[in-house]
Amino acid sequence: MEIHRDRMAGKLYISQKKYLEKVIDRFNMGDCKSLSIPLAAHFKLSSNSSPTIEEEIEKTHVLYSSVVGSLMYAIAYTRPNLSHVISVVSRFMHNPCEDHWDVVKWILHYVKGSFDKCLVFNISKSITFDVIGYVDSDYGGDLDQRRSISDYIFTLCMGIIS
Image 1 (cartoon, rainbow, N blue to C red):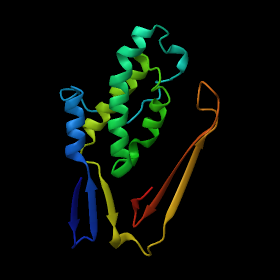
Image 2 (spheres, one colour; image 1 turned 60 degrees about the horizontal axis):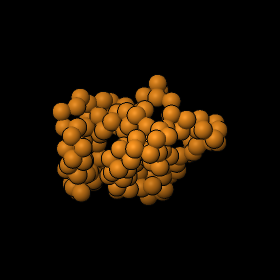
Image 3 (cartoon, helix red, strand yellow; image 1 turned 90 degrees about the vertical axis):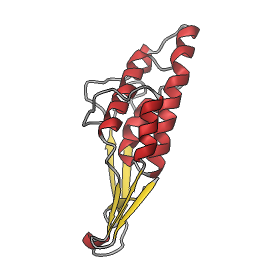
Image 4 (cartoon, rainbow, N blue to C red; image 1 turned 30 degrees about the vertical axis):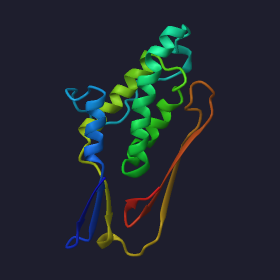
Protein backbone atom coordinates (compact mmCIF):
# COMPACT_ATOMS: atom_id res chain seq x y z
CA MET A 1 0.00 0.00 0.00
CA GLU A 2 1.30 3.42 -0.91
CA ILE A 3 0.30 6.56 1.00
CA HIS A 4 1.09 10.04 -0.25
CA ARG A 5 0.18 13.23 1.60
CA ASP A 6 -0.03 16.62 -0.08
CA ARG A 7 -0.20 19.08 2.82
CA MET A 8 -0.51 22.16 0.61
CA ALA A 9 -3.56 20.82 -1.22
CA GLY A 10 -5.00 19.13 1.88
CA LYS A 11 -5.14 15.72 0.20
CA LEU A 12 -4.24 12.19 1.21
CA TYR A 13 -3.75 9.56 -1.53
CA ILE A 14 -3.86 5.81 -0.82
CA SER A 15 -3.17 3.26 -3.56
CA GLN A 16 -2.08 -0.31 -4.21
CA LYS A 17 -0.50 0.19 -7.61
CA LYS A 18 2.46 -2.12 -7.02
CA TYR A 19 0.24 -4.88 -5.64
CA LEU A 20 -2.08 -4.70 -8.66
CA GLU A 21 0.90 -4.73 -11.04
CA LYS A 22 2.05 -7.95 -9.35
CA VAL A 23 -1.45 -9.44 -9.74
CA ILE A 24 -1.47 -8.60 -13.46
CA ASP A 25 1.99 -10.15 -13.90
CA ARG A 26 1.11 -13.22 -11.80
CA PHE A 27 -1.76 -14.10 -14.14
CA ASN A 28 0.22 -13.35 -17.32
CA MET A 29 -1.84 -10.33 -18.32
CA GLY A 30 1.08 -7.89 -18.50
CA ASP A 31 0.84 -7.59 -22.29
CA CYS A 32 -2.93 -7.14 -22.42
CA LYS A 33 -4.54 -3.94 -23.63
CA SER A 34 -6.14 -1.54 -21.17
CA LEU A 35 -9.89 -0.98 -20.81
CA SER A 36 -11.71 1.99 -19.33
CA ILE A 37 -14.81 0.26 -17.88
CA PRO A 38 -14.83 -2.57 -15.33
CA LEU A 39 -17.72 -4.54 -16.87
CA ALA A 40 -19.38 -4.25 -20.27
CA ALA A 41 -23.15 -4.45 -20.68
CA HIS A 42 -22.92 -7.29 -23.21
CA PHE A 43 -21.86 -9.79 -20.52
CA LYS A 44 -24.89 -11.77 -19.30
CA LEU A 45 -23.68 -14.29 -16.74
CA SER A 46 -25.65 -17.29 -15.61
CA SER A 47 -24.84 -20.59 -13.93
CA ASN A 48 -26.64 -22.41 -16.78
CA SER A 49 -23.45 -22.19 -18.85
CA SER A 50 -21.28 -23.75 -16.12
CA PRO A 51 -19.56 -27.03 -17.00
CA THR A 52 -20.95 -30.34 -15.77
CA ILE A 53 -17.91 -32.56 -16.42
CA GLU A 54 -15.65 -32.85 -13.35
CA GLU A 55 -12.42 -32.42 -15.35
CA GLU A 56 -13.58 -29.11 -16.83
CA ILE A 57 -14.66 -27.84 -13.42
CA GLU A 58 -11.24 -28.48 -11.85
CA LYS A 59 -9.37 -26.99 -14.82
CA THR A 60 -10.67 -23.44 -14.38
CA HIS A 61 -11.70 -23.42 -10.72
CA VAL A 62 -8.28 -22.82 -9.10
CA LEU A 63 -7.12 -20.04 -11.43
CA TYR A 64 -10.52 -18.32 -11.37
CA SER A 65 -10.64 -18.38 -7.57
CA SER A 66 -7.08 -17.05 -7.32
CA VAL A 67 -7.79 -14.05 -9.55
CA VAL A 68 -11.06 -13.20 -7.78
CA GLY A 69 -9.45 -13.57 -4.36
CA SER A 70 -6.51 -11.36 -5.33
CA LEU A 71 -8.86 -8.63 -6.50
CA MET A 72 -10.99 -8.96 -3.34
CA TYR A 73 -7.92 -8.04 -1.32
CA ALA A 74 -7.55 -4.82 -3.32
CA ILE A 75 -11.25 -4.03 -2.84
CA ALA A 76 -10.90 -4.25 0.92
CA TYR A 77 -8.30 -1.48 1.08
CA THR A 78 -8.08 0.86 -1.90
CA ARG A 79 -10.24 -0.22 -4.85
CA PRO A 80 -13.94 -0.11 -3.94
CA ASN A 81 -14.64 0.67 -7.60
CA LEU A 82 -14.17 -3.07 -8.26
CA SER A 83 -16.71 -4.17 -5.64
CA HIS A 84 -19.68 -4.61 -7.94
CA VAL A 85 -17.90 -6.52 -10.71
CA ILE A 86 -16.17 -8.83 -8.25
CA SER A 87 -19.47 -9.53 -6.49
CA VAL A 88 -20.91 -10.51 -9.87
CA VAL A 89 -18.11 -12.94 -10.77
CA SER A 90 -17.72 -14.33 -7.25
CA ARG A 91 -21.21 -15.89 -7.53
CA PHE A 92 -19.71 -18.42 -9.93
CA MET A 93 -16.57 -19.36 -7.99
CA HIS A 94 -17.89 -22.83 -7.24
CA ASN A 95 -18.23 -23.72 -10.94
CA PRO A 96 -16.92 -21.13 -13.43
CA CYS A 97 -17.21 -21.57 -17.19
CA GLU A 98 -15.41 -19.99 -20.12
CA ASP A 99 -17.86 -17.05 -20.19
CA HIS A 100 -17.17 -16.33 -16.52
CA TRP A 101 -13.43 -16.51 -17.15
CA ASP A 102 -13.81 -14.01 -20.03
CA VAL A 103 -15.39 -11.52 -17.62
CA VAL A 104 -12.56 -11.99 -15.10
CA LYS A 105 -10.02 -11.35 -17.87
CA TRP A 106 -12.00 -8.23 -18.84
CA ILE A 107 -11.69 -7.04 -15.22
CA LEU A 108 -7.92 -7.62 -15.33
CA HIS A 109 -7.76 -5.52 -18.52
CA TYR A 110 -9.61 -2.77 -16.65
CA VAL A 111 -7.27 -3.04 -13.65
CA LYS A 112 -4.28 -2.68 -15.96
CA GLY A 113 -5.76 0.51 -17.37
CA SER A 114 -6.55 1.94 -13.97
CA PHE A 115 -3.33 1.50 -11.98
CA ASP A 116 -3.32 5.22 -11.25
CA LYS A 117 -6.74 5.16 -9.53
CA CYS A 118 -6.57 5.55 -5.78
CA LEU A 119 -8.51 6.75 -2.78
CA VAL A 120 -8.29 10.50 -2.31
CA PHE A 121 -9.31 12.20 0.92
CA ASN A 122 -9.71 15.92 0.26
CA ILE A 123 -10.04 17.93 3.46
CA SER A 124 -10.09 21.27 1.61
CA LYS A 125 -13.38 20.50 -0.22
CA SER A 126 -15.10 19.13 2.85
CA ILE A 127 -17.15 21.57 4.89
CA THR A 128 -17.61 19.17 7.79
CA PHE A 129 -16.42 15.73 8.72
CA ASP A 130 -19.87 14.21 8.09
CA VAL A 131 -20.16 10.70 6.73
CA ILE A 132 -22.26 10.68 3.54
CA GLY A 133 -23.91 7.53 2.17
CA TYR A 134 -25.28 6.53 -1.24
CA VAL A 135 -27.29 3.39 -2.10
CA ASP A 136 -28.34 1.86 -5.42
CA SER A 137 -30.19 -1.33 -6.33
CA ASP A 138 -30.97 -3.48 -9.35
CA TYR A 139 -34.27 -5.32 -9.12
CA GLY A 140 -34.08 -8.69 -10.83
CA GLY A 141 -30.53 -8.27 -12.15
CA ASP A 142 -29.50 -11.76 -11.04
CA LEU A 143 -30.37 -13.97 -14.04
CA ASP A 144 -30.29 -17.21 -12.02
CA GLN A 145 -32.45 -16.41 -9.00
CA ARG A 146 -34.10 -13.13 -10.05
CA ARG A 147 -33.34 -11.39 -6.79
CA SER A 148 -32.40 -7.77 -6.33
CA ILE A 149 -28.83 -6.62 -5.93
CA SER A 150 -27.87 -3.53 -3.97
CA ASP A 151 -24.65 -1.63 -3.37
CA TYR A 152 -23.67 1.25 -1.13
CA ILE A 153 -20.87 3.77 -0.68
CA PHE A 154 -20.02 5.87 2.38
CA THR A 155 -17.64 8.81 2.11
CA LEU A 156 -15.67 11.01 4.50
CA CYS A 157 -13.89 14.15 3.22
CA MET A 158 -14.98 13.11 -0.28
CA GLY A 159 -13.06 9.82 0.02
CA ILE A 160 -14.67 6.39 0.15
CA ILE A 161 -14.49 4.67 3.54
CA SER A 162 -16.93 1.77 2.94
